[in-house]
Structures are given as structure tokens and as C-alpha cells.
Image 1 (tube, rainbow, N blue to C red):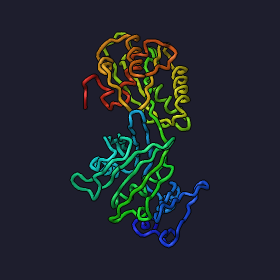
Image 2 (image 1 turned 90 degrees about the horizontal axis):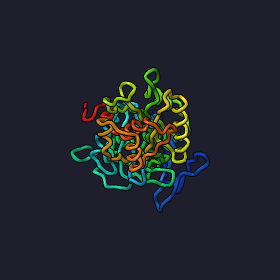
Image 3 (image 1 turned 135 degrees about the vertical axis):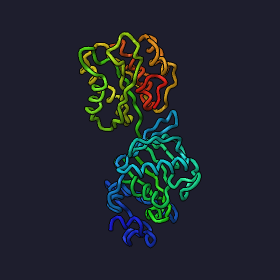
Image 4 (image 1 turned 180 degrees about the vertical axis):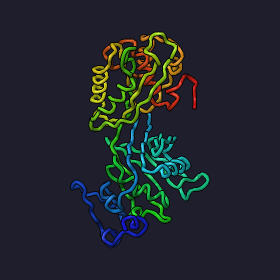
Length: 356
């Protein structure tokens, strides 16, 4: 009966036609607002779940880079098919979407800040049945605007609004609460603002012991800081022809989504964990902030040439990349390479020019 309620009119106790205002309370906050004859209904994730039953979205996270006017929206579902259909339709609809990547039952949307027209309607040529209309930053929060029709309306009105990471969802009208069938729904979903921190690490091991990727992975798993979300670890193949290396010449990168007031705490944690557990005295740790991928000739050089620490430090300064290690040694070369390739896909793990 819970699932059936998605596709039929809301029960009379939720009918807003005959009354001027109904207040839903979450944490003692009234969450309805009246604008003229329209009542905008705001529900928390728990209220959405109570109303419709448990759905399938496992994670919803929005990272923003206000200087670059960009956002990255990470969404994880229980079911791969739902993610794949949503991706194809959101790309077709345009709006705030610039690009989307998929890994299994997860997607990452590269979006632009602002509000944009969408090619939205029943799925067809050049038309998407689900769309991202807007991404707006409001202080410490981000609000994303969505449109969906039929089953895709269930996705943006029922599934996403109860995802872990969502704070509240605004339904512009009562009709937007009635998802499914051939109905069209619109929602505005508010979540905390995160920023992206990428950390390159190298030279934590020796020929006798250690493995940088293992130490980096353990560091990520040990980080339990509230407001810090570990995203992934990448292995970056550096130049295997350099003479002064452990064996394979591979650096590691850690990517995090971080609440702005937790960035310093994260960097201190990573530095201390890595340096306290490294078996090398040459460990390098480099940090880049934001969503823009820096363009640098060192993307190729780090995989093909023999570089000096001084060259890498100069390039890091030019790009706004910060070294936070204490050693100030040769590990900074690989750390720069790792952070430059941290968000450039599977090619990071290959030799330069190597592709799947």
C-alpha cells in the first residue's frame, strides 16, 4: 500500500485545497510557506520516507567550486539501470548538466552553477524525461532544481529527496507530490555545500618495505572526521625509467569532499597519518583544491621525463598546488604528478598516451 500511494492522490489528511496552511514539523521548524494562492511544501528525508516508503537512492552529495562556477553532483543508487536511464535523459535535457560519468550504480554530474532552460518532456529525440534545471549556492548550502515526468518524476520527487545527504526538498505545488503515472514533478533539493580536496602522495616506501597505495588507502579508511567524505583513491603511473625509484614508480592520490570548515583538519590528519606511518624519509604530499583540472606540461613530463624537485616546486607554485609534507625531499616530484592526475580517469594509471 505504501508504494501504491506514489501513483495515486495523496490521502485527505494531506489535502491542501480546502485549508490555507498545513505545517509539517522537523526539528521544531515549520517547513511550509504560502506565496499568494500557492503553498510550497517542504519535507525532510524522513518525512518523504514516511509518506512514500523506502526507496533506492543511497547517496547524494554536491561539491561546488564557486570561483570556477562549477559543481559536481554524486549520486548512488541501489540499481544500475535507474542510474543509466537517468544519465542518458539528463544529458539529453541539457540544463545545468555539462557532462556525466558512470561507474556501476553511481553517477557523477559535472554541472555549471546557475539556472538554465531544459529540453524536458516525455523521452524522445533531443528531449529528456528527467532534467537538472539549476544549481544554486546559498551560504553553506546548495539547492539543485529538478524536473521529471512519469517514472522519472518518482526519481526526483520520491527517491532523491530521501537520500542520505539531503537536508530538505521543496515541492512547488501539491501536484508535485503526486509522482508516477504520466505526471510531471518538479523539486528543489537542498544539501550541505562541500568543496573538493585532492591529495597527491609519493615516496612513503623503500626497496625493503612499504607500499604507498596501501598507506594512502589506510589513511582514507582511518579518516572519520565529521563533514569529510572520502571519494576515491587513484594510482598514478609515473615515469618508470627514472633511476631513483622503489620499483614500479607509482604515486597515489586521495580525493575527498569536505565541508569548508573541515579542510584544515583533514589536511593535518592526512599529513600526520602518512608521515607517522611512512618508512621513507623522502615522503611528499601535495594538495589541490577545487574542481578545475589544471593544465600543465608536467602532465606529460611527470610520465616521460626525469624531473628535479625544484622544477616541480616551481610548477606547483604556479598552479596553486600546496605542499604540506615536512620532508621537502624528492617525494614532492611524484606527489605533484599524483595530484595533477588525481581526477583524470583511468589513464592516470597508464603510461603516457596509453588508453583502454
